[in-house]
Length: 85
Image 1 (tube, rainbow, N blue to C red):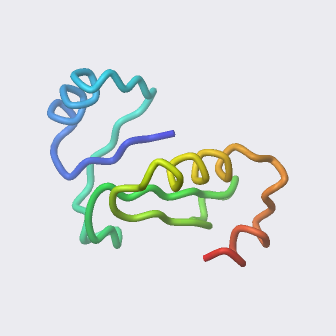
Image 2 (image 1 turned 90 degrees about the vertical axis):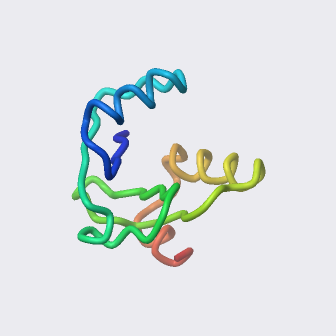
């Protein structure tokens, strides 16, 4: 998992620390250059780094549970995920 912020790494690290979110890597990039239109955006990738699913905006509690279940369920193949886009 990685968090990507438009700000620099220090601001991102401070935000995540304050929010109590512990992830191993933080990157920064201008969102417009990588096709992200707003936050929050969650991208699920396959083992080749190809985006197979995307969620934009604040998720409802039900959507959060479904997204986490889909992202961690090994039965979801790339074809199944692409069919859900």
